[in-house]
Image 1 (cartoon, rainbow, N blue to C red):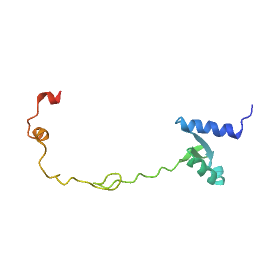
Image 2 (cartoon, rainbow, N blue to C red):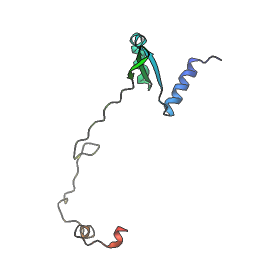
Image 3 (spheres, helix red, strand yellow):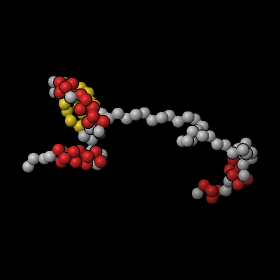
Length: 108
């Protein structure tokens, strides 16, 4: 019972979707010969182990770009907003917590 290329691709997709890590060990000579194809496979989600004399030496994995660092004081849209009365007094129902006048049932 021979499998087609479509079957092979379908199995790979199911493994990727299910979260299974896919890895294959390739010898160094074959890796050098087929580097472009291996890079494409890794970009597609595969992990490829490169071995020398049968011993794993490196792993080719998909590139995960670093997350953009947020700038302090800005929201996700890059804007900062502060109400005009931000320095004003707090409402009495909130200020009482800072003055130690909270009710015991507030902490139950």
